[in-house]
Length: 345
Image (cartoon, rainbow, N blue to C red):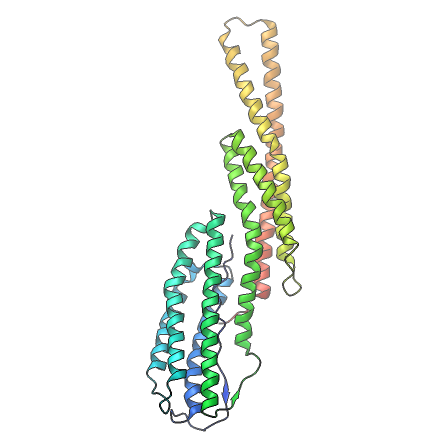
């Protein structure tokens, strides 16, 4: 049900260098190219992971890819740390090693929090919000680490007179950037959807238990969250001109509002059924009921049967509309991801 976009690493340090013909660590351009290739490899591996995660799979289901990525990061870290200082200058090398260490620790430690939260977030709005906040915090760590590394790269190039030929953004960088933007956009819409979605489960549970107080509280909260959600959606702009997800979310919220109104019938029917059970109990106590007693009981039976049919029809209609609305939401989300998530193999 939930599409979890991956943690987004906005780091691509590939570049062309106008310097030297053969690779050797006495040449500053070749020295930097070696480090750049390590970063490029990690970025590509991460893009493969992010693509798999974004296209319909939770982090737990692509855990094997994460483990392989951790090994790749460790290898890159060792490759860079094994390089000599360049004419006594170890700034770029050591900054890159530190970044790889940060990257490894985030994937190994912080991402375990993501895996653990995924196990419980589906049943709690607070936990779901916490999960998305953890992802945002990780994104920020990676962006901060990337900036430090880019600054070290530029400083090293300036010190050693290396002319870097770097375009505005590589294709891979654009893909990673778009995943990040897609992640943030979808999470905003998803939280709007998720709050009434969870509340509706409480309503259905209360109805199943015939808890009138619970039904009233749950339906009022469902209406409140849904109406707030509709207003919130008005503040969320389309994603690259695509408003399909917000539109599908709005349709679902409008159903929840309708459901909240319709479930007043559940409270009425529950009360009517309780009243009928009292009438039935009193009637069955009479060993020789009068005609008036029988007529009164038969009328109560007819009324409760009529009420039951109406209630069941209302519930069937709601169940059908719920299924259609949720299917439309899920289908739209899948199409949205397929349309906008960059793929890398």
